[in-house]
Amino acid sequence: MATQGIAVTGCTGEDYAISFENSIVSETDDPDEIVGYLLYLMRHPEEQQRIRVSGQETARQFLWDRVIENLIGKLEFLARKQNIVLPLNHGLNGARKAPDKSTEQNVIAQTASVLQYPQSGS
Image (cartoon, rainbow, N blue to C red; front, top):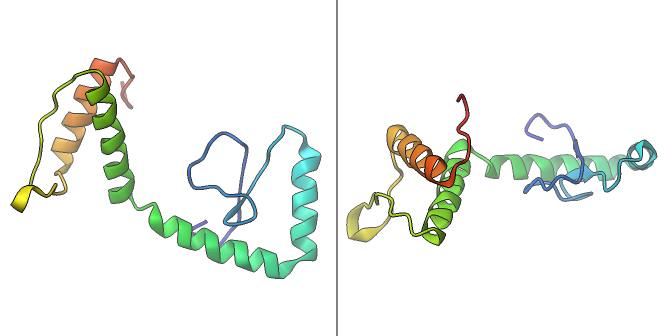
C-alpha cells in the first residue's frame, strides 16, 4: 500500500483491508476469484488508481506509534476483563501520554504473561 501497489489479501481479518476500496480481498480459496479481480483491474485503470490512492491513505494511518497505542489499548482491555491491574502512565491533567519504549514493552510483557500469550522472540 505505502509503495503505491495494490494489496491483495485473503479473508483473514486484516483490520485495514477493504475490498475494492484500498485493497483486493479474496473471499474464497479459489484462485479464479483473484484472476477475475485482476482482469477487472486491468480493464479499469481508473479503479486501479483510486484503490492505490486510498491504499496510500490507509498506510499513513498505520504508523508504528498508532499501531502500538492500539495494541496497548487492546491489552489494557483484556487485562481489565481479567481484573489485572497495570501501571498507569498519565501526563498533565490526567491525559495519557505516550509511554516510552521500555514502558510499552513492560506492559506488553506483563499482560502477555498473565494472559499466557507467547511474546515475540520467546
